[in-house]
Image 1 (cartoon, rainbow, N blue to C red):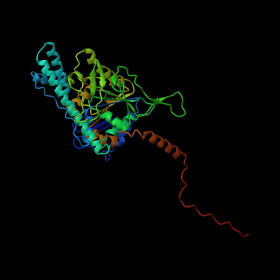
Image 2: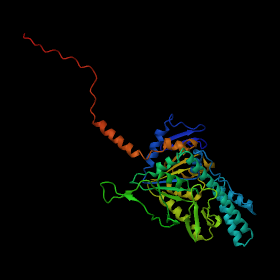
Image 3: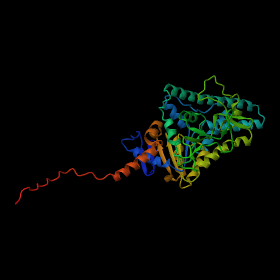
Image 4: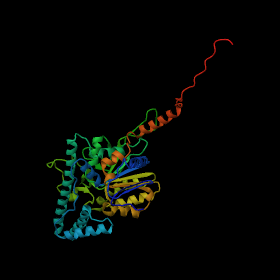
Length: 433
């Protein structure tokens, strides 16, 4: 039976729940007892990946009482601007993604600029200026969101009321016998990096260097291991380390001398802080890239998506998706390919139906037994999700050992003596016959 995509519902294993209007009550309806063990089992998979989208930043911002970036579509105000908007919308419809987003506009405008440059049209310079202004407006809105989140955390003395830190801890603290968490994001902001700094989580990415970290094609980054006490020659992964891949680039990535570098940019910097974006059209490395040559266009995005494919499309892999709107075909295609491997599993946590894109993805993908769904504001609320449904990874090993010890001791304890009254023993005669 198809769920009500406009309500709250979950599908975890054989568990099915559908609520059309009101959000469910986790305690009264026993949802935690059914969902949490299922997610705990999936998070023990050999290979675990987490894909997050703009919904994560939105949830964290609202949870901290601040406003997220609107991510509204740009208005270029140049000749052919209406053509760019119309083509972006038609492209989105052709890809069955519903409404167009700002990346569709940027991608279309980029194609137009390249065509005008090829034709040596005078409008090319005007479009480059308009494109750069739109990028600067986007950067400002994202940095304003970072600034708001940073201020809210400072006002709360570092207390995270949104649940973001608990979410990362649930995934990042993998058992040392398992592979690292592979965390993928389509966001340009540095919310994840900021949260990991607060939690003391070490991040492994493709950047190498201290003063000016540079993106490298090799994944051979410095990793840390340790030898368990009493065991020699069997190193294990160090706890609290993740691999982070920003599929669409980042606000602090720049193109310098045909190399991708990460520039110093604080989280939520002041308005007076220099961002180094005098010409964002040619230097800012966020997708879609405005580089002119095919070599740079494929690098680094081809390497980033190769990491995504390598982490997800392999046996015994689980992919958690949170706050991603299924509006990127290049990502959806990889997820579909992953599900063709029968031992993989996909968990989707979404605030809503994403303008029909989530329903379209599920119906066309198939493999229903390999997909778990938690849809609706109740399930997708960070605080509700972390408090009720995500397993407590930090205490899970202790909980399992406690259960084993309690079971062993329960089997060893003898049955308690009966409390029934003991009949009196007749007195022994002391005299003779």
